Image 1 (tube, one colour):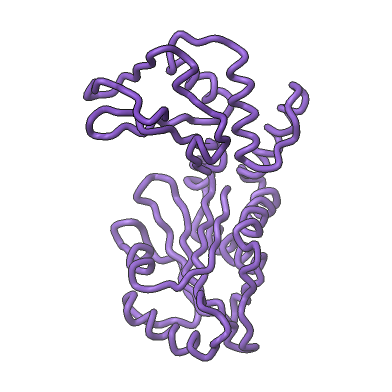
Image 2: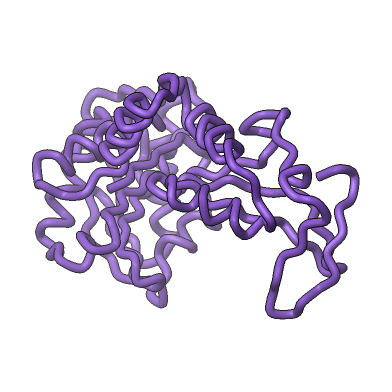
Length: 264
């Protein structure tokens, strides 16, 4: 299970994306009666305009069970988890305006929550300080209580396993990925595909960025457990994948002629 949260200005684009019947269905709502995004935003603006303290008065939240867990959970369980998630973030589910919408279009069931930050009873704003990290741990606690798969626990287990193999304790996901990259470099490769496979077995997917001309413009590292994605230079500027093997080529469906540009 993965939890995500951020404070934002909200608006029609985000709510139109969330309230899309082709993507899924509404789970439940609170203190809102609008039939479409425009009406809901107008309702929320009435309350949000009572506060002049913050620019970003909307919370965009996502609660995403693992693929396997998502298929087993009922709507009542999804609703209970959503309430637990919001309360863990300091949201009063009785006195805040919010709408929860389940997306199923990608066969990976997840919940989007569009929530106003202003408490209608106290007039206080929900704190957005480190709310992204709080959401990760909130999802972890919910998964632990319900015996569901937690992305945070998967990461913790991998860190412990890495320590037993001589890794240092990573300060961040980027450090964890870089440690695994260094571990992968302990062997030689005849092709980049071999390097990609070794990284994949350690829980990191390496994705080449290929343009229309077939040129590799760079690489991204994706933590399989948490879905966090970074450019190679964001992980560590010392990473230079093109030096792993000489003249690397990658097979694609269009079989483009691969060349490197600007050294990455």
